[in-house]
Amino acid sequence: MDSKMKLLLVLDPTSGFYPLASERLLNEVTVMMDKKWKVHLTSQAILNANLACDYEVHKVPLISSLNSIISRALFLISSAYKGVKIVKKHNIHAILTINGHLHLGFVAYLIKKITKRKCIVRVNENDILALTLLIKRLHTPILSNEVILRMVEVISRKIENFIFGHVDWIVTHGPMDYEKIKKITTKATLIPLWIDAEKFKPLPKDQTSQLKKELIGVSDDTKVILSVGRLHPTKDIETLFNALKELVEVRKNTMLVMIGTGPDKEKCVKLAKKLSIIDKVKFLGYIPHEQMPKYYNVADIYVLTSIWEEWSNTIMEAMASGVLVIATNVGGNPYLVRDKETGFLVPPKVPQVLAEKIRYVLDHSNEMEKITSNACLSMRKFSKQDIGELYKRTIVKVIKN
Image (cartoon, rainbow, N blue to C red; front, side):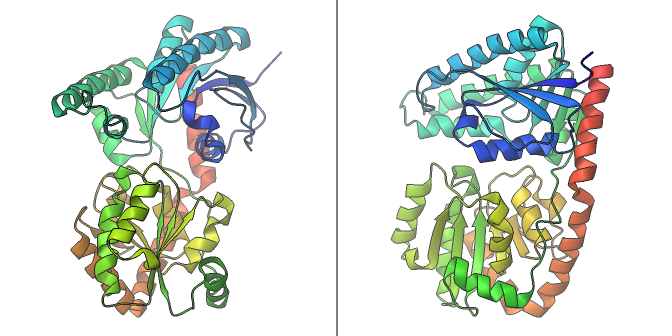
């Protein structure tokens, strides 16, 4: 008799194009699931993920490019159809989404409705904001109209509320999202992201000096500001660049290192040239996650200028690595960064304040040692063992309820 706990995970069509990012998302939930668990994945490509549990990928074709809304819609319809077949064939216990709660959550709800299985939706980003930004990037005159965008937002909010009210359970790592969801349903759990403290930790100073030369190509006296994440409108790179322009006028030995790719890559390069700071910015593109501890350790400051951030794993990684963090006072950032105790918070979209805060940090390095030490210690409560077990217990409780 098969005693495995079996889940169906409905994945986004982008999962096949960003397999490593998809693997990280999967591991956030499944990290402590052993071989007694079997996860079935619907994806537009065959994923070779390094997961602790058993898994099987069921391919759902993507008809054309991801830039086509029609193609995405057809993919979601196919995912629902394929999902129903998988649930019935493999006797799945529960349907789960790990991102994209607005569109994938609706697909999971449809599968639940047809198959009578339990459904758990994970909220890990502001899907409504992401949708409106996507529509704006399409540069379609009709859709880009402010009235139409407002209508899309209102309809999306109604769909979101419907999903929250009709699935069996909701999990989120965002404190702000959790407060919002609790107003709609009590069937929700706040489960933070976890940090691998064995991987992300401070390295000896002599080692970081050498790494600074090897990885960044700068001398030890150069001050490195690090930014990690998708080059996307929500990250507000414009504010970061304007702050850097102010900063380098008084601190010539400053370098901004950008790690990550995204739809705004060309726009960022053009802006750096326009502000005459292109020689002070290094675009390193994608860096494998296993190499990231080295890059955090060569940084003097980690900066996050997002206009919205529910729960930032890059903040956690930087703090665990002993790097001073400056982040915008939005979303879940204040839950991780206690201003002047474990880092610094600044208002969004104010480059002058950001530049001033960076200068202060660089000018008071002795004072910063206590803050980075506090930050490093604060990350211990987010171990992957504790968070992974919490996911397992939550899923089992929902299935057995």
